Amino acid sequence: MTQTWTLGVARTDLARTTLVEHELPELADGEARLRVDRVGLTANNVTYAVLGDAPWRYWEFFPPARHGLDDQWGVVPLWGFADVVESTVDGLAEGDRLYGYYPSAGHLVVRPGRADARGFRDASEHRAALPGTYNGYVKTTGDPAYEPDQEDLLILYRPLYYTSFMLADQVADNDFYGAEAVVLSSASSKTSYGTAFLLHGQGPRVVGLTSPGNVDFTRGLGCYDEVISYADLASLDPARPTLYLDVAGDEALRAGVRSRLGDRLVRDIAVGITHQEPNAMATTAVFFAPDQIRKRSQDWGRDGLDQRFGEAWRRFATTVADWVDVQERSGPTALRETWSEVHGGHTPPRIGHVIAL
Image 1 (cartoon, rainbow, N blue to C red):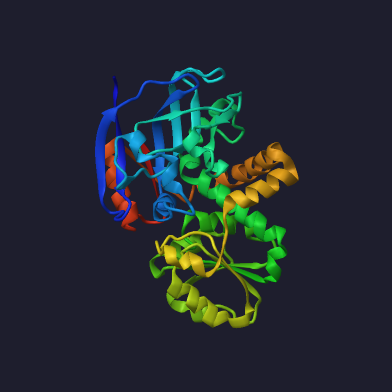
Image 2: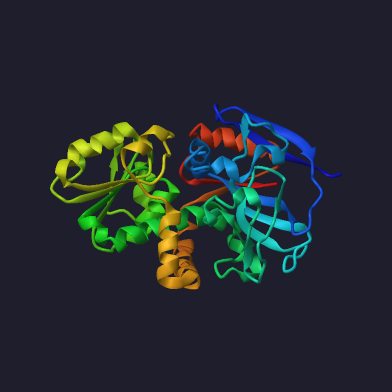
């Protein structure tokens, strides 16, 4: 049998990792084997690990027992591309290239519910009760957003920009909750500035909060009306009704925003936890992209939603290429080293890590 590998992250200590080799299982009827080829690693993947247990359940997508590990370890989900190397499934052939949600591993076995020209959803039993948003795999030949020379942008930005797209849509769908200003924390992060890109010019003033060292980078993006350092919260205008989109998940920062804005803070929504403080999530309303995806799938139909996202992505892709420097590394060891770097918060906002496996 052929050997493969998996990167495990200790569930109780995300700084601790292991790289193991193990045998590939035989395929059963109705299954296909994918070789993970090219993935990205961002703060978003760290969020998956921080929120890995219930109710978010990110650890459950790729059970460690299926990847040569015991239960003390978790397999962090990554977005990227893989190639079909073996298939017993009609409509899925060796050589098909797929964008989707992959383990930190060399291979993934999937059980497509139904494969067509667009792709499929993994109907493996352990994924049946998990959010369907993460179970879809898109063939590059059937993806209107795919361009071969934009693979790295899709790897780094597509899942985050989809979150931004749905967040901005929910905000606009609710008439900005009556706000005249929208404030985003972690403004230098991809999720924040993707949202700002979509909201900028839509009516309310778009304000970014970021660390002092990232102020110049964030201002240079051009998608915020104003950028304020975390150390200068007194610059927030307390006279405007304000919506706070908290991507940082920093409780002290949230308290500072609340104190500054008082009753002019019309709504406070947690979007992520780039500061890695899961307990902060319990103190505010939480945005969960799959909920808005389900709503818009009903409103517009899945094809209508895909069309709207494709149009938004093409507008964004032409701009974001100037905002990121892709740093490519190769191999499992490089993936392990990159995890340590990103988890430790050592990646400048302009760097995008892509790992060829």
